[in-house]
Length: 126
Image (cartoon, rainbow, N blue to C red; front, top):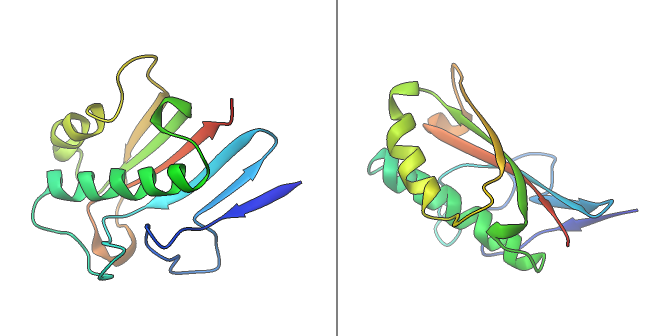
């Protein structure tokens, strides 16, 4: 059985998908982009600001599901420029303290709304 998770504290989906789906003891969070949920505007000041907004969007969805960053077991980071990896990694690292999740980071040709970073996560409900 699955349960759809949505919160007004994260950006509304821009297509036919849910912010997250809980199933089988896991939470599958859709890729988050640096969209401010209050304004709908894309945060594009710099790559660190983009990464922070993405992580805050993930945090809001985790919170709605009763979870936090310690529950994350897997992340996928998509960048339009691998040259931004260090700065994104710096921001990303501030959200985890230990027992870091598995992760891959890949460069892609383009992302929705021409953003520079998108991150999806899988968390365990334990």
